[in-house]
Length: 496
Image 1 (cartoon, rainbow, N blue to C red):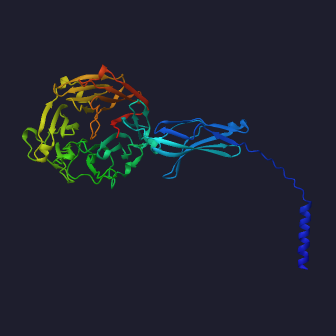
Image 2: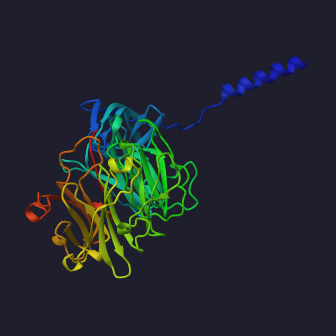
Image 3: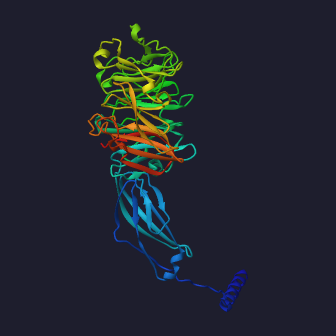
């Protein structure tokens, strides 16, 4: 009986299904097929140059062109990360990728149907950071970035943003480039929030700003950084506040870190002097202790700064009479030039000291080569200056005040005004071309860069230097502007 009822039910369902009339109203839309073509599927671009491709995109129904959306992106095979670089049909984007080969894609999507098409390219990125003026500038609220001016005059701006998809945190303070043994090169950026180690080939971060220490200092306040004295790079020194930190670089691929601050009772002025490291002398690092108006040095293989012994009365390195160190420069041979100010009357003095190998190896006190009491009546505005630089091959000290640049002749004890920038401009950084490099460089002392702030914009001037130390033709060779913020530090990057 139950089986009979089931069969009747199924028969009835079939009858109903057979009699049912489908009243659905379906609207089928034909897909508008997308086709992408280009002149080549292999593209070559220099890093930080603009990639330009004009694809031909066609549709079966060309009236749908206005509904198309575009996305250009490349794939990094090392970390399988994709980077979108444009949403325009015709790409005009600066490429900050590390030199290498990438898969580049154009995706075209019909927004009305969601249907898309892809086109694949092979993108070869070559290095474009050989040499030029390298500088650090303000790039927004509490952030910084860097730029490089190539010998051709091309400006590569926003290097950190392009390479790392972010600015450098903190206000800009210093940028340096060291070329050293092992055919190795180093770039460091120093801001109010840290000390970043940068790859010189592509400007990507190697060690982030907050990871340069085994343990962050209790008060992070990076002020200035210097390599060890001499031509070879074995370590670098960091002045954090009034304390000095050092890190060793045991090999070309090392990523060392700063340890604790050097021990001792001192408050360091941010300048390094001393014996060339590769000479293995007794004074590998010399600093000036502002708290006690004295010089101190770091003995080899020690972690505590100590005072000099056997100080003669004529030049007591343990008692400089309350003088303030304004500037110091150390040559590759270990000769230091230091500019001091006596706060009581603003008088200025220059001391030139020999920390060279002969004296350092015997651990004798390095006396001053000579000393100069600067005649302020013949050195206009020098006591108001805050920016200084020393010629590497002439006895000349350059200094900047407001919009004026002077050169001071150490032999003649007088200054000469060599350039005045436009009214309202202020000089923010200066640099005589003298790259730290273990190989000779032909243009040392023959070019001079000056950064100014003019109407809120950072400007960089490149001056050719005559044999007299003045500027050839009494003017600049090139003026560079690119909507930079205030430029705070200039260095010259050499090629490997």
